[in-house]
Length: 259
Image (cartoon, rainbow, N blue to C red; front, side, top):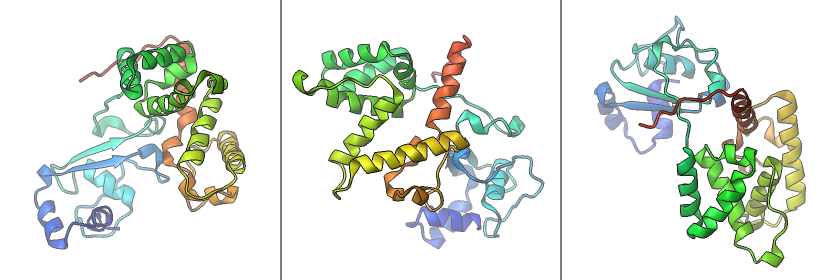
């Protein structure tokens, strides 16, 4: 598709006239492409085929490359997010790389205290997480901190006699998280156990075949699941955690970019 059609697809409120006016001032434009590692086609910043006209049809990966190489809308800014797994095959000479490491240790505790609303309860939950290396490592990512807090809230805020065992593994954590979604946030009354089993089968298949992302209209329906049940939020989760755990075991200390 053309760049103008790509923009119009995602920003339906822009009229043709307004969009044309915006493209006349490329220096004021920032394009954000989120999740390079989840894109099923390969993006090469060294491609010889580039475009310069935003109204001409090209492959999307060529549009992205042309924006980065400044043959298309010269002087615009481009921000691409990705997990490290997708960076190995890229020529990084044309881009500036910034490593975002997420929460520092002190920020993790602060997040728990604010998330629980009760500082003492937040500290208690955080101390439990600190004792579990895997759960504590996950907290570097704000999204995973949110999942952990949402699960532990339902645990620590329940009467003591009603509590089961607190989650101590990634599997237990996500089963409790999914169970909470299926129990409290679904309108249809469906077999929750059946859905969890199907999700488990899909997850096992993904690990076995090294699939990082399941596409809605392709793999997901083959497991008997509706695509709306599954979110790209979980894609790449296992590989990312395993990589980070491996780095920690090797004693490698990543650099923090705080500002």
